[in-house]
Length: 294
Image (cartoon, rainbow, N blue to C red; front, top):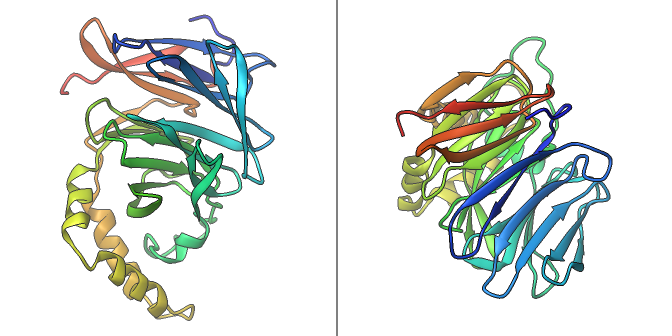
């Protein structure tokens, strides 16, 4: 594409066509911004997340900012509208917070801090010399159903949430990458999730079966809370760790691509009728990988 250190790939869905176009941008005016388009019958809205922590809602027909949503206390790194729910969106930021927003109320209706939920599910014993990274949230993506969304964070974990009215519950959390998860992206019409990491890997996960198992277990959240209360900060308290290791063992990638460069952006799209993933990194090229088996 000839971009100098491509940072973002911007997608736009055209109303009534279902088609997508994508463009890479780099430069001071859009540097480190993430844009998401969502079609409405009468107009297109654009949501942008910026370094001030604000989320700007732009009306593309009126060509002006109509809302400025402020709640993140650090950089707002990612924002996404929920499909079929144009008045609802999710965001995440370097303040380690994930938020569910109502545009009608112009405020978040639900907030969680990823650092706090680390105590709920530890991924197992820490390796010697391993440093714990803070759960700075880098990317969110909403599945086409509109009720399931994912968040990738600096601690290497991928978290899956379910929206239930005006609150969310965490359905799943697993170690996705050896270092920070820089990008997450649900494939269209599925619960297949692409993730990209600072470790230079791109992975494809099928989270549907695990989410369904969690939904069929009515006591799942009670067990999680009990595990959190029972977790002992002293040595030897490893019951919650064992449960987390079992969960981690069940969630394995369907596909593992060694990209070799830190992933700044990825997008699933169809090229010449075949599902592919586009990857922007710190070089001046956009890479394309076919997902042949899908």
